[in-house]
Length: 246
Image (cartoon, rainbow, N blue to C red; front, side, top):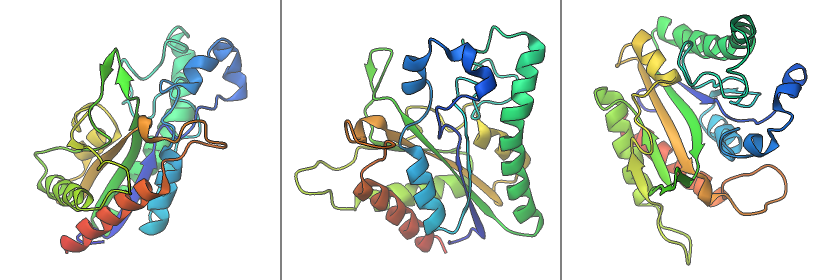
């Protein structure tokens, strides 16, 4: 895998489930839980496929981001949703302790272990975004979020997007619209931003994948999943980028 001795995949918003003991808070929230506010549909199958292809460890969130957001740092105002923000401080601290801290700790330990042993880690966070937010239509299908000041991240993202741009689209389909640091900045608050503060730029690269939920097949039976050819194109383009960066 190029300059990286280990790849770690995380999927913070993999699920829209709510633990039983907190179900009363979400009695009238099924609309929110099933929307982009509750989770990132399509991300878990892609995260699984990436982990299989690159023999990576996968850390996936088990509960809705409306309970506590695994891609927000402790103390961030977006950590709790309107459904949990009104709880007293002790209840919020308990939720953070039980459902947020273990994910951050496990990911950080895995990466620290590899780096302490002399390795280098590529951390891929898998996310998806709603096609329209606050009446603004998003103009990308696939984007990579990274810190432009970190040469490892910048170079890999350029090669990855270049390889993906060269992948031929399926018949009667247009090519994927590719962007970088969109619809969010790679340096915004989140797990990769936190980990960059701890790990040096030549040992850790944190890249977030963002896929437009408009690409999800409509009314599919079973859990939402991005079309296999899109998953395959994203994964093969990464494999090419990693092979090129040896």
